[in-house]
Amino acid sequence: MKIISISGLTDERFIRPLEHIGNLFFEDTKVVFERKEEGLHIDFKVESDEKTFTVSGQVEGESPFICTKNITELTEKEYFRQIKNAISQSYLMVLENHTGMIQKWGILTGIRPTKLLHRHIQNNVPAEEAHQALKDEYLISDEKIALMQKIIARQLTVIPDLYDLKKEVSIYIGIPFCPTKCAYCTFPAYAINGRQGSVTSFLGGLHYEMNQIGEWLKKNNIRITTVYYGGGTPTSITAEEMDMLYEQMHASFPDVDEIRELTVEAGRPDTITPEKLAVLNKWKIDRISINPQSYTQETLKAIGRHHTVEETIDKYHLARKHGMNNINMDLIIGLPGEGIKEFQHTLDHTEALMPESLTVHTLSFKRASEMTRNRAKYKVAERSEVESMMHMAEKWTKDFGYVPYYLYRQKNILGNLENVGYSKPNKESIYNIMMMEELQTVIGIGCGASSKFIHPVTGKITQFSNPKDPKTYNESFEEYTNRKIALLNEHFLSEEVK
Image (cartoon, rainbow, N blue to C red):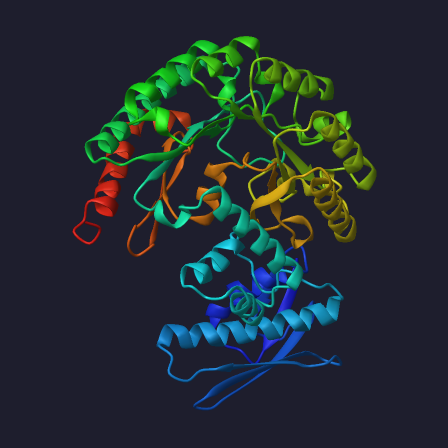
């Protein structure tokens, strides 16, 4: 743990944002407002008058970094935000100077950067002015702003009515079972072997939720934009169970044939069979994910994925043979033991397959994952090598005609980078766009599924999560369904919305 002791500040509301920024430079940061012998000491000097707030930050013996903000005619909330912003910017520049590490995302630690640019577009702010605002407020680099702009342009091409879908919903259906649990995973996922009783009970609750939510949508003439089956691994259940699940979807949801996109994650190749692909065909679902993560067998073994490289390739071709014409594949940069050579090997294998879309993740040490609990066991690449691998992915996708269409970031992500979804034109995942940009309510159904209710008028977000544990879910799905319907009434049927 890195101790950063700070003098000149006393408001404890600053500690959390300063720790988040500190974590961009050091593995685990603790900020204290008292002088400590160990660690790093930063001295802040603060001056203000009626018009401006100025903060200067400095490590002893190094250059000071000064930031000034206008504080005239601000509400109390806006005033605090400007002060926090000035302190954060000065702090970032001090740490960049001290470590030699440049943060291309600036002080931004949120996971959805493109939302900020969407907000400016919705307010009819010219692009150049919006870009400058992002640089001034967050110190985001030109490189990352250009990436954001490219992604947003693609999103608005794919979904021209993106800003007009607030009165529709998308549906996420969570299947909390996998063949095994991956070392980096924190999703609600349970090894399916020996759990058939739990699976049967869970599916009963899931069918109930789908029926009740579908009935509410039909009654209130609410359309569905996309449906996404995630997890876990939705193809962990049997072909017969999948068949009954999709039959329930068609019986429950309104106008299923008009839904813009149906996606089923088949992320684990070891769950894909001809029988399951036949079921997907039967219900006209042709967008799936088959996720290699890496094409190095030693890596797959280290992270707990029990399929082989050959199995990934074989199942990809099997899916093609069964008519899957929109396949996504996930790759992860920075997996244990992997560097530039191994990632190039993965890109070479991807070139031989050419899926319609490719999501390039940067490894994140998620707090609850096995990999984080035993971090010393998993050796990962240095920051500069991780950045090189990301540039390799950017060049490879550009060379082969893929376009970036969504991105998100995570805490403790290697190199303070990002996860980027690339696709061939017109093969983008509409669900991924809707989920990441938070412009539409997404109803989560199933074990561990999270809902985000976006108020159509105010844009306020209300989050609601189902229980992660199958046993708890099985005991309480009726209660949770009723609570979601109450939130739907509140968000879609109030006088303000009408």
